[in-house]
Length: 283
Image (tube, rainbow, N blue to C red):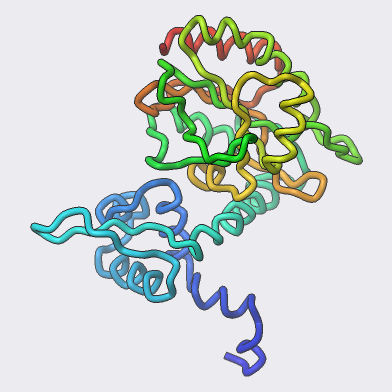
């Protein structure tokens, strides 16, 4: 390394991330694959190389080992605070890859059916949401993604309410309309035993102000730290100075299994009605 690298944050971060495999290990841990055999299977990495990479990430304070079995000894590899702070970087890398490598370079809040983003979202069907994943709610406390007392939960991600997008971004407009439609349909969701949770990368106080003004009856959750986007590899775009969720809907059952996905969401009223129908069936 050049001497100047000693004071360069980019160079020091590159030392920790190291190579392709370290980045993919962090990606999988963020997705909830925290045990050795799970990591080896998901990444397709030899046990020797995976052991080496995990050891380096633990030594750098990005992961820590947690014992879950004594005979034989088995560990889970969990993100430390330093590791969790890398999640926005992973999401930014994914956004860059979706836009500039897998896409045509344009900024869009939607996707085509032949896109990699479309394939990733629809591949979530049948998968289980990571354990212990909570997001800050508009009222201050961290909340689970899935309501503990509901037979099913509808999670809908949206770019942001009350945002001045500057130049129009395809698919970005309509967030207030979507929330109003879910608000108006809320009694029907509750009669079906279904909860609803809206998620954006806006800050909790921004969501609280909107929720109060619009009398939103369900919880609004903030993914400003990109924990959910990293865990599910959700599609994002950069607009108005912030990485934002593209609009999609997940129907999740009481066991945290994703049963249905709606993406891209083009016809918002139809998607809200469809989510009610699908969630009612799942419940």
